[in-house]
Length: 120
Image (cartoon, rainbow, N blue to C red):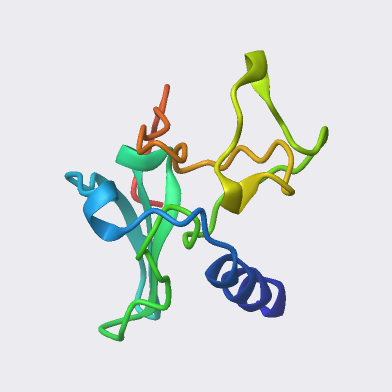
């Protein structure tokens, strides 16, 4: 459980910088719950985890922007990453290649190709 808390804290610190207006969408939450916790993944943004709470408690996930969910995020070179000569935003030029699960910097959400939830 400690690793999950650390992951939540880390993902809350890493942000792709999209404002809430840029990520406006219709959430499609696939959730599971028991008598203690609620857990949910938003299928409209690549299945990123956007809900984690104690039963009837506040959501511990910050979904303010696409970098704040619990999600996969990868880092690699080169720095700057310039695909086909396209220059990155000044905010990201020293970051290198960094795809995230929710979507891209221009506001295009990631697609879920397959999903199953049997309630367990």
